[in-house]
Amino acid sequence: MTDIQARLDFWNRSGKILSKGETVEHILTEIADEIIHITGAEQGYLYRLNENKILIPFVKRDKKKEDISQEEITVPRAVIDLVLQQKKGIISHHVQEDDRLRSILSIRAYGVKSLICIPIQVHHKNIGILYLHTVQRDAFDREDLQMLEALTPTLGYLLENEWLHHVALEKARMQREMQMARDVQDSLVPREIPQHKGWDAAFCWQPAFEAGGDFFDFITVDEHTLALVIADVSDKGMPAALFMALSRTILRAVVGNHGTPAEMITRANRLIHHDAQEGMFVTLFFGLLDLENGKLTYVNGGHNPPFFYRKKVEEFQKLNPTGMAVGIEDDFVYKQKSISMEPGDFLFLYTDGALDAVVRQQPFNEEELQSFIQRHRNADPTQLVSMLKESLCGVNGGAGMHDDLTLVMWKRRVNNRNE
Image 1 (cartoon, one colour):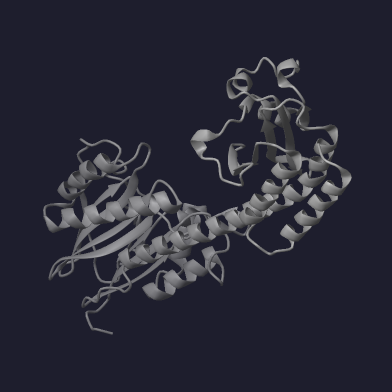
Image 2 (image 1 turned 60 degrees about the horizontal axis):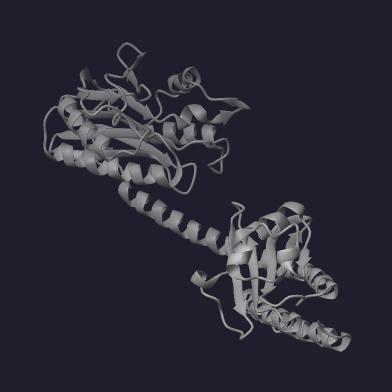
């Protein structure tokens, strides 16, 4: 219980604390000390409600102006829940005689005799709690409650700003981590096309977010054999990026051990399944290309069927799946098929980001994709991939994209000159 002059002094000291320009935590700690002093409380707490409605003790102080350890907290949670539910403060001069509180066992256990508990609100929304108690009866009066209720808007402003600052720092941290993930992914996908006499190629790789689950690869097996890979992980963002890195590493490992494409993907499937979290898998197209005779032996593990264009008959053939997506069943045995790429033929590989793009306010479908490739079939790979990317993503690259986008075109030249 305090006189008017003491209250005026309290407001004056609080104003000076607010004008110091210290951190929010420092300001709130000093104000909590002033509150404990002016009211005669033995302990004072400021709680903040996080985004999951969980109460986080932000300031915990005693009358000696010392922090209270987590193990020494003596706050009846039932009192806080009551105040949050009612959205108004309560004062109890003697809790053992208070019908609202005397049944709360923790109050008796902590020896609490008098308490004040006030919700801290911003725009009528609970964002925190101010709680004070003492083991003395009749320690607080109605003027204490009114004074503290007048202060809580300021406390709310400070708590909200501290939370916004925390959110900004967390967002910046996540952006840095996502950029690091993007940089790692950039280092995992090819930066340039491998040069082989008689062949041209082009690619586009564009994650929808900072990091994604699409990947492609060109793996040299020997001087005349090249492995072509395109794959799409069943997720987006950071989990997909990590699973993408795992899948790529495993694929490169099994290629290094040699064998047929079917044997390689069967081994990769067992390894990927072993490390895959529940519900994660990867669709892929994997082919071994003989650069001398043009024979491509491939496995399609549940991936979007690539388009194989045969120039001699001017027809498109879709290379349909030869097995399920990789990582679903550990004992699945994959099958393989073969095609022969003659001069002028090309293979066009893509992920389903091409079919999820919105063009002219409609999703771009498989028929439109084939029609686009058909119209531009005589363009060189770099031109065709560039035109398709602009059609799907816009001039600035990104408009209409809701999924990762990867395009790969591999074409056998009509002649074998190095151009």
